Length: 432
Image (cartoon, rainbow, N blue to C red; front, side):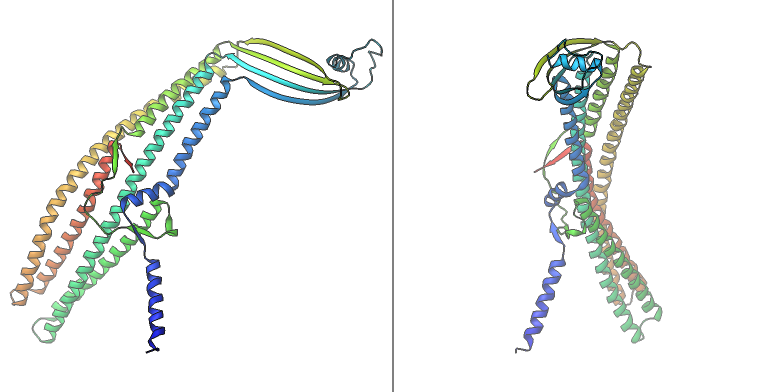
């Protein structure tokens, strides 16, 4: 009795190892959640939104006064410099040689302030452009969300289709093996020609080849699924067993975020034109400073300065004109890009509708075809058993059944994918 214990332990260990290597099945909502968490493209889109928001915050800085602290140490025996340093320290004396002063030290601490009071609307326009660019980035992120959800759905149902193909090919090989056994027995009994036995073997080889291809396609579909989810081969996951019932996550219908992003980009480009045009307008600034100067680091003399300045750029080497031309070209490019996206969305929507209609029609047709092929095969087998049909007719009927089953499996998956494509084209957003 005890001699069976090692065998049982080994069997249990092997079973556990196989179980650990088996991919973990995911439902469609689980797969979508995992993709939204791990997909690198989606994470990159989120960072683009964060960067746009940070850029918008930077534009707000121009609306506030700029305050800086500065410090310096200087020493000089230059008559002018020494005289100015002494004056700043409020330690000037007529005693001494003005032409040949001794080395004068100065330790300076300073507070500087600057505030742009008016710049022709450049700051406001730049801030508005950044705001609309941020919204465009947010809409692009929403589009990336919808794209990823659709890709997960497509990869999910592709696994189901590939799994069905493997099942169909496996059933075909099993049936072909039975045909080979029947043909072999009848050939041995002298009831059929050797060609029947050879034909059965050829069809079996073809079925085995199709099974190999189906298994390879299934393996590839699982790899694609993991790549879309962003887990790669580090986490073995797969889709749950094939289910023709369409999943219905909670959704809200919105306009296509790609179009919304394009519109925001156009508005942002228009604001950039206004910002460039501000180069022709006078700029008004306020400035102020507060200084502390000392020659010995113990006694400090303070002083302050405040005022306003106005500047008008009379000639900048056509720099402003070039900036305006560039901004206008970018604006026109954004408008054309919006038009292109609008046309693409209209085409995608119409194409998705046509694909759904086609896949639904194929599904209805293939459902009848499978039943007819199964009945035809059974009739042909009965005729063959009674000597009223050739083995090649049975093999042809087997092949026809396999083909119709594959078409049926493809149609079932294509209907679900087509429905997801319709949702994607209409801007349906998947939510928990």
